[in-house]
Amino acid sequence: MTVSPTMAFEWPRRDYSRVPFRLYHDPEIYQQELELVFRGPAWSFLGLAAEIPHPGDFRTSFIGDTPVVYNLDRDGVVHGFVNRCAHRGALVRREIAGNADSHTCIYHQWCYALDGTLTSIPFRRGVKGQGGLDASFALADHGLRRLKVDQVAGALFANFAPDPEPLRDYLGPPVVAQIERLLHRPVRVLGYQRQRIAGNWKMFAENTRDNYHASLLHEFLVTFALDRATQKGGGGDGRAPSSQHHLRRSGERHARARPRGLRRGQYPERLSAAARSAAGRVPARDAG
Image 1: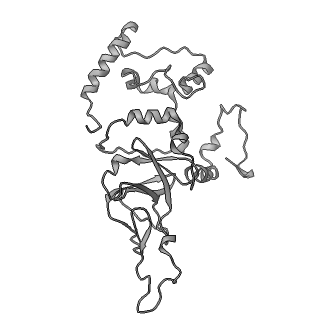
Image 2 (image 1 turned 90 degrees about the horizontal axis):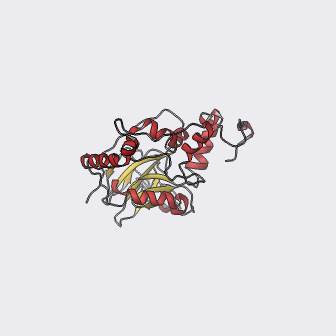
Image 3 (image 1 turned 45 degrees about the vertical axis):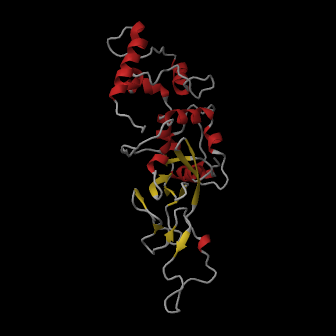
């Protein structure tokens, strides 16, 4: 990231292991992040193809602070675009989801096709020969700002760049493999749970990659063998990066957590049985 002179700051250590707090609350840095990351060449998660299974289905969301819409057209193609009218910037879709043949802005009734193309404008020729748009006005030049959309196993991603890096190359083989493993069967959406987190976006991104706390705070992860300190991760040595880093730095010994009442030798066998038993009681989240 290129920073302006007013944003210059000193890192406590030269190895980037100590992050200045300013990076998490400086508004100027945040604005640059919005432009260079979210509205830049990075691929952002958009949603699931299972959320828009029928032609005309659409959903609204955000990439950074930019409102976006994604929908399925009549040919089975997923389109994504900025949810701002090309006329005055009003929100085009104000619902969370729905089904429609087109998208019409309520402010001046500019109408857009499912691919974001502007199709009609009220009073384009004026009224009784008075007013109207200039004869050179071309509908094709005033559609909604389109996003590049691609998917991996039904997980939809969007990019603002006109010619971005291929999605699978951007994610990398390990991440693609995990997505394909998770979404290897048809998915049926059962509902939604939403949270509002009062914090910088980087805090949430870091937390999901912090394997050090996972087996300590979230006991179900070790109870059902979903997480372990020695599992393969993104570190240079192929192990979970966060936990290994913290353990090396602190010099603490780490013992794998065990459910209460289990002796060390019983853990793998008893754990597998418990996981199988619980799995049979958990409602399935995929169709088929």
